[in-house]
Image (cartoon, rainbow, N blue to C red):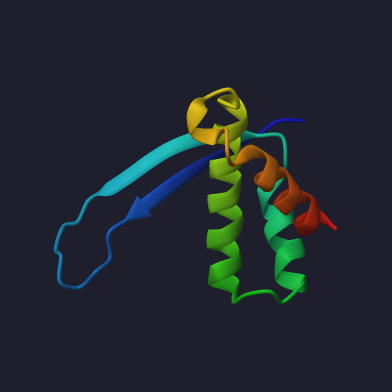
Length: 89
């Protein structure tokens, strides 16, 4: 089953008025809300940090997997695979 997500990032710094937004959609084969819930139960980080970590990791890994042959990821893909195995264990 594929999931579809919508991300909105808004500037909220008090020193910058009218900062603007970035919005985009992305697909995932994982239920991101379930992943966040599971990670919160592990008490690795605060709830906000878990959300940022899970969303960031999912976005990054999705782009990396879609472009796995890109030279940018050549030195990183093996280490990333090991990291993901450790995270999932």
